[in-house]
Image (cartoon, rainbow, N blue to C red; front, top):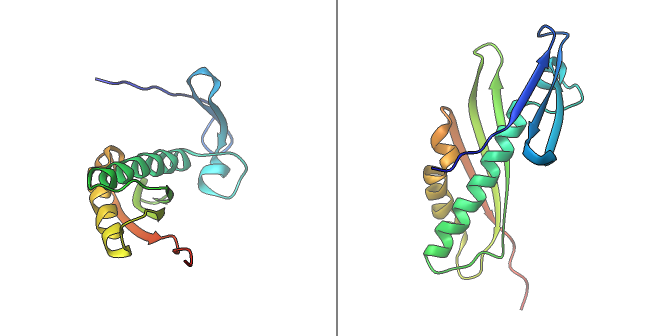
Length: 143
């Protein structure tokens, strides 16, 4: 079994406190506050990090799904938009907007592969929220 870790420290109460989230070996350190999480304050928040993890996992899953079908993607780029319902205290939706440059497949096949990757991505499997995928192929260059 593979394990990964990260740490977080919080000091003070919720509205006035502050904290830092860290990945091992100094790969990432981000401050967070009530304002960065629930308003428009400076810093990061757990939902952005979940979005980054989901976008990364989904991109890899999609590339793998496409490669197993016999095509190698030139590029897969995913943006994850995480919707946190403050009143419910939970993530209610994640939108994955993916753009791909994949020779040999059309937009319909790309969407099918994206739906499969959504279902099989380990992060998708871990999120108890609606997940929506919007897949778009890069425009083909003129010959």
